[in-house]
Length: 366
Image 1 (cartoon, helix red, strand yellow):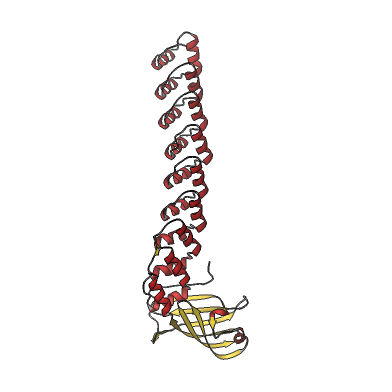
Image 2 (cartoon, rainbow, N blue to C red):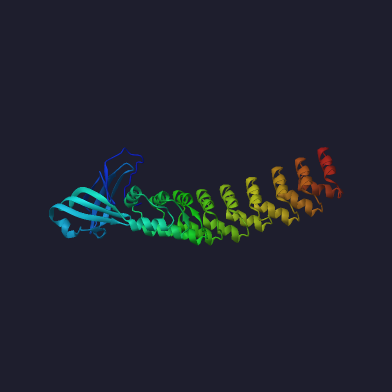
């Protein structure tokens, strides 16, 4: 987090200010105190005008000042004039300084070259009061150029907002590398607000995903690790962003995905989620496949819900029965198990239909 403390109150009560040529003089002030950092001073600036009320306080290297040196700070000076320089302009300060501590008033001198470059980059023509705000927030041309290079579409106010949100050059570069050529300011702000960083975006690309910005936010908000997406691809699952989120939310692990696909379950996320929701394990699917059955997901769910055991699946097929899922459900609901089928065969009943078997069972033939 930046050390700058900035408070903006839109529509503050009108305060005195003076426009003199291109310089703005505000009913505001500056204060300098000693800093714990070598070669720095603690600079506090308060601004009050009809557009804003703001306060900036941070440690500033002496190299950012004109007319303020370590020698100046070490002595006693009743009167002092110096300038604090940022891309958006200068604070022309005057006041009193005693042994490294002092205060006074200032005039803001906007940097017209800064305003021209901002307009050239496509972020609009900033007004005088907006330039003062840009100065207070530390908006730099490097940031504006990086935004322009990344294809971000924004007004000057949005540019200030993104700078204040802490959008980093690294994040912008990651967005570019992801092949996203046109970025809206609110989309970029959403990435930052939701904690989506450059590493996450690059990890998504490394996993073979090129999601839209809103999809990146959705994946991140649902806690989907980028490595899970890579694992899904390696397992042969062509999962979309929505699929990946659903699998993650339903608690379908990568181990389950691999086992199910190896057992013959179609590599469809919806099927995997449904089987998981009904408590169907890979060994059940494997047992059915080993017995020679080719069940659909609907069949497997129906069998599981009606308590059709692996033993019944295995013994029925071993005895030569060609039962379908509906037949097996009918048998199971009437209390027919694999052992009963074997006893019937041993008694000479070999080619019975499911309804005949259940009738025997219901009538106590054992």
